Image (cartoon, rainbow, N blue to C red; front, side, top):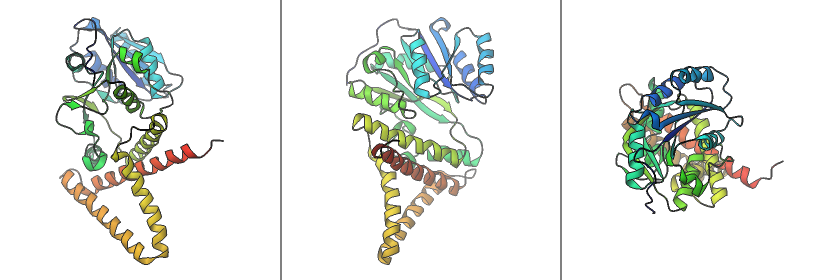
Length: 335
């Protein structure tokens, strides 16, 4: 791993890029958190990239622009996240850039600490801990599932408590020259664009540092349907990464797809041969018992165990279905 320190001042100009679409419920808090950074005001700028919002997002951004000239607004006619990030990078003045999710909020020391870590570790990218903000039992259950080993496997940036070199970064903070070395975000990656970039960084010899001492508030999906849609798309995106790079998969990416294949094939065989059917029922019973126990361990007085178990099952099934959907899109010719 190369330890290349960024050139420039001790306090370089930093550009925070906020790609948004229909974020009226969260964008004000997000931008206020950026305006409240303890980093020198004349060394920080914010670029909001709007993907043709249908709600009051743009109006609310303009209100913040009137109060703080460091905020700029540009249009993203392509609407997608990688296009928005690339537009922000292309318009950035900073020698360091960071991505900020529209439904997140930064701690006041975020930029200062990111700069310090990037310079001190030599990392090409730096990430923070995800502090999930929830309302209601189901929302909390989804947050618990998506920050647990049984929910997301060895995706350590979702739950690790120790600072370490990581697979990817949330929400993402990079030296600007990294994009000169490995290229911008891939527009073909409608999801997983950050993971795909992280893979290119690691292949180029760079490192990504994870710092759990810095917590970024993030609002996760609040319904099982939203969770299903999100992780199904993540899985499809991971197959696209595999198609592009011929690798980049870990064991956690394969298990849900194998689980779905077992359920489908096992059920078909079980219909024809009852011993096989009994075996399938036994395996499913063990799985249900496992996620029930996990629900009991992760849940609490304000979060029913069965909500956590349902969230875990939704994660596994959606990722498995998305994996096979991505594979079919790969092998079947397009019209």
